[in-house]
Length: 212
Image 1 (cartoon, one colour):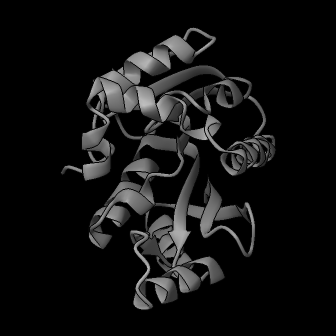
Image 2 (cartoon, one colour; image 1 turned 30 degrees about the vertical axis):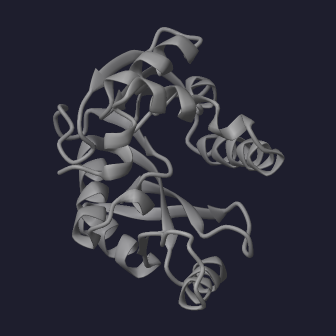
C-alpha cells in the first residue's frame, strides 16, 4: 500500500525539505517544542525500556527524545532518503531499516515500545488507518504510543466547515477514539493515557497504550 505523502519523500530534495519543516516558522517551532515535551512526559510513565521502534522515523525529529527512554532504538521509514537524513541527525547508535508501516519486518511482540507519530492522518483509506494501528500492536509486547487525528475535535469540525465555505486546506484523514479503542482491545491492549497539544488548535491525539 502506498501513501502519496510518503512517496513524495522518497525523493532526496523532499526529504531535505522535511528535515527543516519545523524550523521555518515560529508556530511550527513552538509546536515542535510542545510536542517533544508531551511525548517525553508520556514516555516517562513507562520507565526506560530495552527495545523501541520509531515508525516512520522521518528525518529523525524525535530521535533525541526517544533515545532517552530506550537502550536500543530502531528507526524505520518507507523512504530511503529519509533514512539517510535520519542517520545524519541521530546522535546515537540507532538501527535503521527501510520498510512499510503496513508490513513491518519484525516478529510479533519484538519491541517493548512502538512509536508512530503524525502518520495516521496522511493515510487516505480508513481501513488502512486501522490496519496501521493493528500492525503497531502486533509488533509490541508492552506499549504503543501513536497519534491519530480525532474526528470529533473542535479543530476537525472547524477545518471541515472551512472547506465547505470554500477553503483550500486539504482534509485530515480522521479516526474516532471509539474506533481506536476497539482496535486496541481486539489486539490485547488498552488506553493508558491520551493527550492533545491543544484542545482548540490541534486535532492530533497522542495516545499511550499498554498491554492489557
